[in-house]
Amino acid sequence: MNDKHLELDGVSIGALESVSLCVRPGEVVCLSGVSGSGKTRLLRAIADLDAHRGRVALGGRGQHEMSGHAWRAQVMMVPAESQWWFETVGEHFAAISSAGLAALGFEDGAMDWQISRLSSGEKQRLALLRAVARRPHALLLDEPTANLDDATTQRVERWLGQLAAERGWPLVWVAHDAEQIRRVADRHYRIAGSGLERVE
Ligand SMILES: Nc1ncnc2c1ncn2[C@@H]1O[C@H](COP(=O)(O)OP(=O)(O)OP(=O)(O)O)[C@@H](O)[C@H]1O
Image 1 (cartoon, protein in one colour):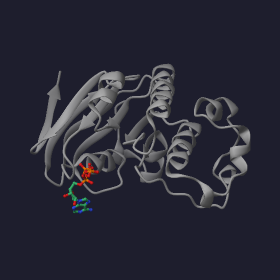
Image 2: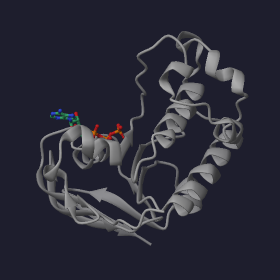
Image 3: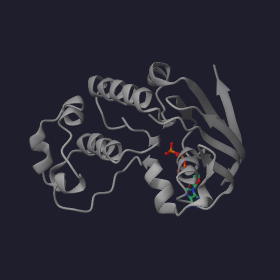
Image 4: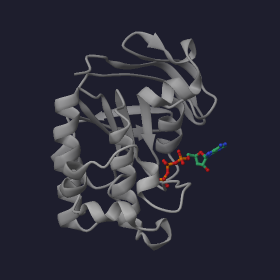
């Protein structure tokens, strides 16, 4: 199990200035804010996908002490719109995770599906499974249930919450839905102006 904290110290990107935050292993921190307030950009800064100022570290090791590729293998972002490179689902996975597929409402046969046939909700769930299968040490989720119905949303929430606790991931979860935030968050911050404001 991972025991590494994800730390942001004075991170600035776009309109956000000097954001500092520490997410503990197994802790779910939700980020909300109006459209365009900078939630996605902050996740992209944490994943070292966009240029930013300030320090981001996992377990005391700074983002810039390793290549972007090595960093993102540990601090993995699942964007709102997933990218797929091969023709079938299974080609994106090193091995079949029957338990993971079942937890997300799929049978093993889903590995043979063509990417072109996937619904947005199927893509979203399979992108989460793909990220989890790569054994990250921290996870950044951008509206991971945006395309899902209520029952599936809650199934995915339970699955992610359990995995974060079991594997000790610091988890940053961008969400809009207040009910969802109440269900999943250990802490909740709203983007207010150029910073984060704690919501109790
Ligand atoms: N690469 C970029 N360079 C400059 N500005 C950008 C860049 N990417 C996004 N922006 C702008 O930064 C602001 C924040 O964008 P961001 O995607 O982080 O918003 P968000 O809070 O995730 O919004 P939403 O809830 O609509 O997804 C927006 O005004 C957007 O147009």
